[in-house]
Length: 535
Ligand code: F6P
Image 1 (tube, rainbow, N blue to C red):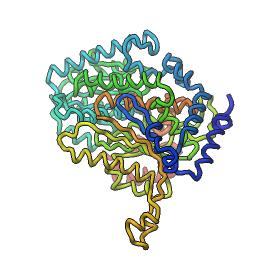
Image 2 (image 1 turned 180 degrees about the horizontal axis):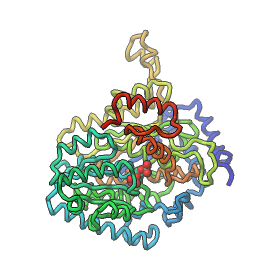
Image 3 (image 1 turned 30 degrees about the vertical axis):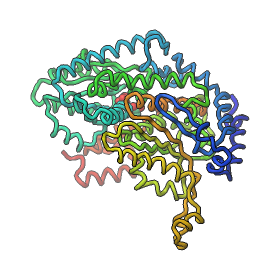
Image 4 (image 1 turned 45 degrees about the horizontal axis):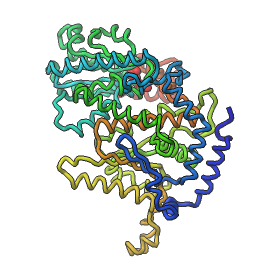
């Protein structure tokens, strides 16, 4: 296949980029005041406005042409059909099937059977636990994809249903001892359920924390009894769950064909159902399902994930943006940037293409961000007046104000204001008229022309969250097609894990590894001299 950057579609975009060199977004609004209407689309309760990007209809058409040249629709069909799109691990990527309905035809009959069976098992388990009323607390142990999605969903649903009567859910992901100790001091053993969540069931952090928490629950009791009464396992590795002693009726499966970072829709979503009931979890799935259908059927100009993907390609590959910020104006979405870090950076943070060849173009940017109103009082200074720039996704949330309308309106007004300020900026002459202090003019000028996308959610509930996450999932897939990457493997996480295993004995006061890295060796010696590694 011809190299992507040599293609006529890529070259056309490079030419359009040159034409945008001296053009400002505000000029584009002057010449086409209707662009706020034409450069927007809506689906799944999300209104998407890309009119504040440095682009116009010609750029968008050229981006669509690039996606056609990359056979975007063929890739979509292959994904949905269950072809081995994850070619390095020889498997399909069928996370959409986890939220599908019978008859949707995603993957094979076997795929559907698995989903129906596991959903039924999950429902039965949730009903058993919720109706038993024995547990006030759930400790969910898991990391990466086995943590970030459930944690985000819990925050959002807690915001939408402040009076939920389900158990409190506590997350344990890392092996930082302090939070674990705090939890074990605080929670009543008898009224705490432990869920061990790991696709592989070999992840070191989860195994270690799981063991510690089972011991804590047992507190002199038979471990077998505790495992039977208080421990749930969720994994694709049934043999490992058996080996760990988890009772068969307490096991839920997740499939091999959904990556960890795409697994919220599987039994990994258990804490959502435990706390808010199975219908709430199903609402989450229904929102994602609506976005799946939209992604497959909407025309390019109206297709939210495709638009987001192409705007990203335009910023990353043609305007050379090395980072991308996600700025929700909602505390319930505070964990969204972390969730998207894994989704985008673990999926498309690759430097070789599907054929194993080193690429000569940028791929996934560094994703970062935080709640907008906090950011305004912290990092927004750099975004407005610094030398670097970052494209931003503003996510604004309307809907119920929980009786505090002024606060909610203040949040919305600030989100709107930041997008406007970043785009228009303020030149020195305006600053002179407004502030009248000549000496400070250079300091008070804003260059502007900083692009952003705005998403407006009428409100934030399980369904819209499902749609929002699925929208980003499909954005990542569409970008992987343009960049010719496999977004479903993650070999880059392996090296550090191997080295950590090799170093553990030395950290614990044992022998230095053979041929230690000199810097690590010095650090290990220092740790030892300060008493670390001694019991
Ligand atoms: O180390 C990265 C990773 O493999 C992620 O892809 C995954 O979500 C996480 O670790 C946890 O893996 P598991 O669910 O198998 O414990």
